[in-house]
Length: 179
Image 1 (cartoon, rainbow, N blue to C red):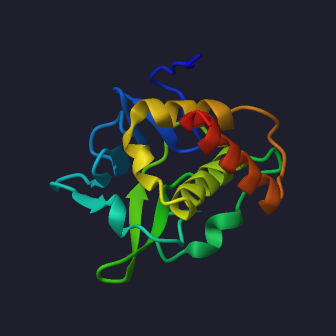
Image 2: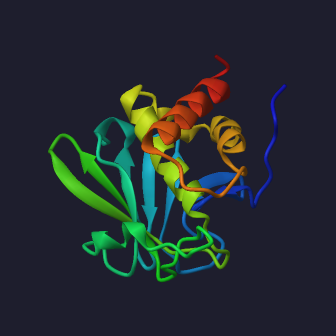
């Protein structure tokens, strides 16, 4: 049985809004956010046409950082004692791309709601798992993303090991794919 998700469903900064999955707050005008499209990651930018990064260009090295500037990568670990992301000024999705090889950062504005650290870590591991399995293009299927997020969201907000995060991401890919 397929579990349907509704607008407002989220996993850290990843949220379904208007039938589209994106990282960052797409509901406010003039914000930065990254949309998951069938053809790739689309960076929405105020006062710009944005830019598309095809799925085939994305390599390893996906991680999220928090803060106003992309180079401030030390903000990966600023969390509250209750396990929430402490930084509220925005975030960055860091990627390594191929053809040509380059590191890039996609900016996103945070939602008004706080993010659980465990959800942000699960999102990172989901992205890495899809890259490892060469299935990143599945992020362009809103129903598939909804099934994966339904598997990953919720649960205890506790610190998890890297091994446990990899395991749950692998389970989410298998569950969402129907295996």
